[in-house]
Length: 62
Image (cartoon, rainbow, N blue to C red; front, side, top):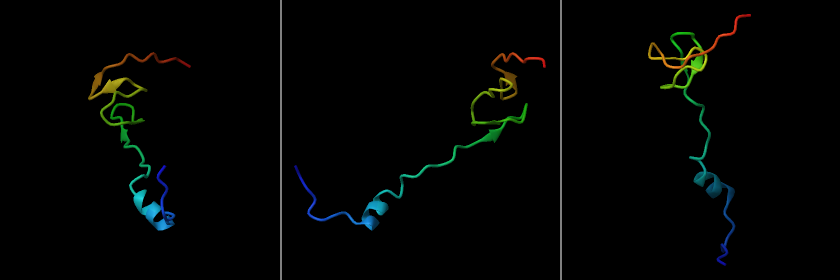
């Protein structure tokens, strides 16, 4: 097995991993019910996408 001759320093290791970071997902507001949703997806609360009802949502009366 190949073994590194020298230990990788903290700086070199961190420089290699600089692009490995988490990013927050994009969120848009549904124009119909004003719920936060992912872009280009039907709203899970009201079922609308681009002003048209795509998914039938059963709303419980309370």
